[in-house]
Image 1: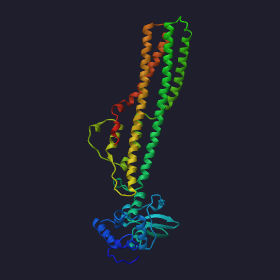
Image 2: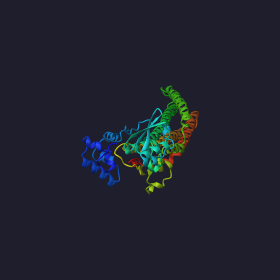
Image 3: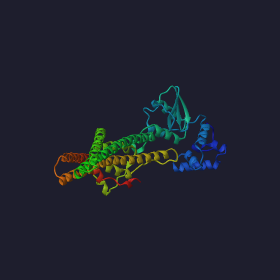
Image 4: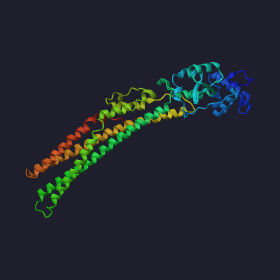
Length: 404
């Protein structure tokens, strides 16, 4: 450690900055007075008001203490066994962190690597065969603690960006799964179109046979019935195959519960500000969940460096949650749209078959009319089972403008 002409021990650590021409003597003294007045760190004043780089400050501290220095990097592979039993509050107060290991030697990043009290504390908390103490900015030590240790949610200390990324991946997987469900529903509606087309051809064929049985084109009318039967067979085969897979997805309530489970990161990473609104009394879980999103905010202590990315990570995760809620809505509405298609088609064919029997009376063709009637009623009933569970979500759906 070099001797200094400065009385303030905090600024004498950076006296080499004056010797190298980065600062003037009065500027260094003014920085020390500003830090003392604000009850802050001299290094912060030098960085953010005199615009000195982190590397420049670390080199000055290394020259003062006569040791190597450690710069914060979130990619540093800190061995997990070094973190067991460490107290984040104690490390913050003392200003040290186990940054790495080289063989049997543990490298300690410390704000004052020559402090004997700090050295004894390190040996008490972290037994090792050999230690190497390197100087680090106090801000960097706090970043190490925040990235590698956990604490209570009201003051997040931990690798929060990794945690938020994990939650975003979970929500992305669930949205992908719901997209597969929507594809199944779309395939079902496509099969319904084939079934509907087949029933239409059968109805047209039987009606033409009744009206123009003696026409020169009469031999072609049975072909319409045969073609319609083919489309019906194809539609039924595809429909039952898809329906077996469609009923594998969870029911609407389970869809909503899983969506809520993928968003439990709010408990640890977000803070919800409840605002009394008329919509707050909505009865569906999904709509209440959607109402939480625009009324949530993140409280992160501001910094000009790495914490900015943490704030952006929170924002990305919140937007991913909004997309997940909307994806759940789309999946439920796809189910309802499929049900409404069945109801619409079933009622149409049932009405047509009843009209044909009423107009032409009972005959051998009435067998086809009855078959179409039964198919129409079955489609309508099946559609009710698709639509009924999601009717309430449709009534209380959140507005698309809830994203801020």
